Image (tube, rainbow, N blue to C red):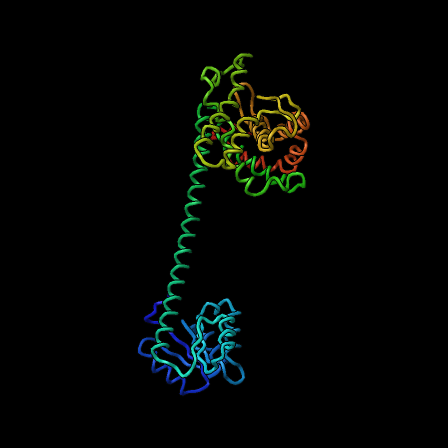
Length: 367
């Protein structure tokens, strides 16, 4: 940032006497460099950029207007203040100079007090501008850091809340992590297709990924006698188990009421928690929605959730192999799952397998 007391002034004039006058006025306060023509000035500026330029207009070969235009067209030099110091005193000359980007226009013969004050003022303005720009950069950096911190906190909160629900069901293991990554890889694949391209933007995919851990948050509302029952549930118990979708939606709605604007991650979290048990043909729950009436986030979660349930060991079933799980999901094309989602899943089934192995449960339940 500019220190006005250590500023460098470049005086550009083809007359040595004028250069001597400028040095005599300013050398006591600043380091004054000199150039006798435009090309020489540009060479000096390219090597050591001055803090301010005093520029004569009437010079041979390359006049002051050309020098100024060259400086203002270069991003590296366009912010250097230029003051025209010239014998051209017509109003149109001054107007032309200021229009080219000069910050001031002083006519000869030079008045030393005016020259000193004008130079000091423009250096102070330059220092203030640089300070403001620096403060803006610091502020922007802090905003980025704070946004990243909030995003990280949001992620941790979502996973923690999901883990709270899953902790009541000892069979689920790393189910949260796996399903979260399944959702992401499937959404990325679907985004390549025209049908989903404009819907599954990178921001939407990220929000779905963050929301996925809350798909079973409603389990916290299910009684242990049902949730942890080792055997088959009775019809009445299963009806209560199905209410975890309602409990999950209601919990997220309650959280939504505490913020001014509904954020995407809560919108998708609500959709996923409430509707991931719906089926494409309308035979799911809680509402029996069918087709595209089911939110896309929930349709994607359904594929992820079922795949993971199939490859995981449960009280009521052994862990199926990846190939068998793929086959079962393919059989559900058009009934349990949207056909296009199954097609996308089949194209990247190996990616699901890789996720399952990366986040396999410690006891080796993933086949």
